[in-house]
Image 1 (cartoon, rainbow, N blue to C red):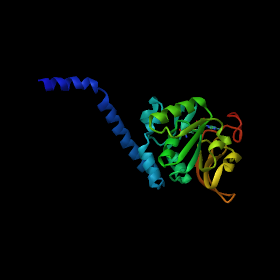
Image 2: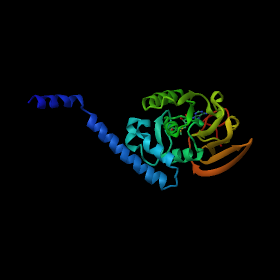
Image 3: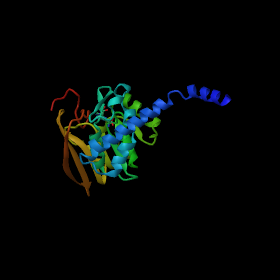
Image 4: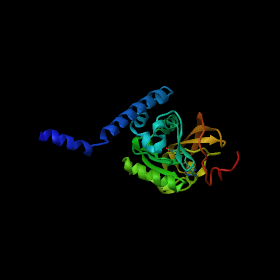
Length: 242
Ligand code: SAM
């Protein structure tokens, strides 16, 4: 009798936990489907990148109203008129950056912090810079809560790079620019990789730039559509035309 009583008492204390576990299980299933169908099938083959995409809970990086769409094949709003990028784009950019443990990495365009978490899973020392202070503060809180306190979040114009932590083995720019900002090239280490969408306000090409002994070589990877990189070495203002 007393055993039954204590079991009954224990239930309200744990209320909500089974539901949470069920939700996390369901999100895990969706995440695996995302990796197999949207990433591996489309040509992302780096197992370390696929593992990171399988591990990081994307649903924690989107507003509650969009959580049920977190593993869909699309960007989603994150507030402040900005977006979290499509999962395939995050994976493709991360793969192109070829990050090794210990690499120094700059992400320009923190947004939700999701791409920064993926980059951190590959063992890099990550600095991420965001021009919008509200998004930067939210990303900081979220990254702390999810165990990514070692990611440095900076508020500022990322088209200027971030000289205090330069040079970088990899720079990943998650907003579209009309040209490659010179400070980013200058802050790239020898042997470094820069991944950046270049083009008009409406359509860009994902470009991979290598730096080797002071020379740069580049390769176009994929057509893409990003929100604008707004800053001193990019679009001057969101109202600018191309
Ligand atoms: N990587 C983000 C994520 O995982 O959620 C998505 C980035 S969102 C597509 C582009 C972000 O770039 C926006 O948050 C925007 O405020 C930011 N941005 C635009 N221009 C910037 C600049 N000059 N410096 C830093 N961030 C900038």
